[in-house]
Length: 251
Image 1 (cartoon, helix red, strand yellow):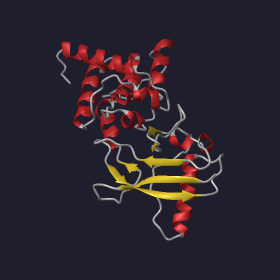
Image 2: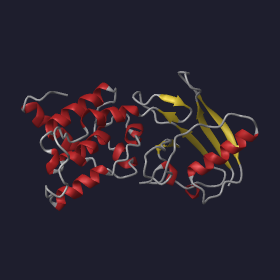
Image 3: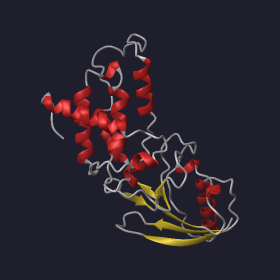
Image 4: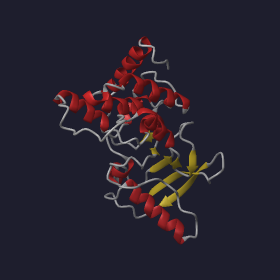
């Protein structure tokens, strides 16, 4: 395959960048999107040019590190896959492909296609845990968990924190991510003691990071590689309402 690439290049420490055009020959349709970028970088290095910087780690759709806006779609044109699991057979010979980083105020660009997603870490740190203040953690089998609650918790815990929901949302909202991180604890018996405090703490931190509000557009669910449901946002809003009624705080 022969491709024309338009890749966002932005040096570190510079407030803005630009799209740079590249031509790439010999791309196998069986290669992944990141392998295609590896091939581009090999050519750039051969020409003594700086390679394109992008995030990646496991390349198995597990870690959430990879994340690119490809032709205007977070993670690209194939549903329910991460960028690293997108293959070049989804494109055609001669295609022009535009590659950009996540776009959000809370995800500042570090260099080229790499953004700082540490805001997600701070949201989780603010309340995404179950406290054990004394002694050792109880045996997991001591508290029985009904299957329906376990299934719901596991569905929420599937979130890998890639940030596609934020990149796709016109408001740069992190509601889908935050609600998933809340639901995988709030759905379990072990998470009930801190349920409403947790909701207030994590949503307040989300707002402090500069993410936008949710207006129920649904782009977040559409691009999520793990197909996290919008239902979790509704559950989070119900918990916040109850927390406010209990006097635990306001958004």
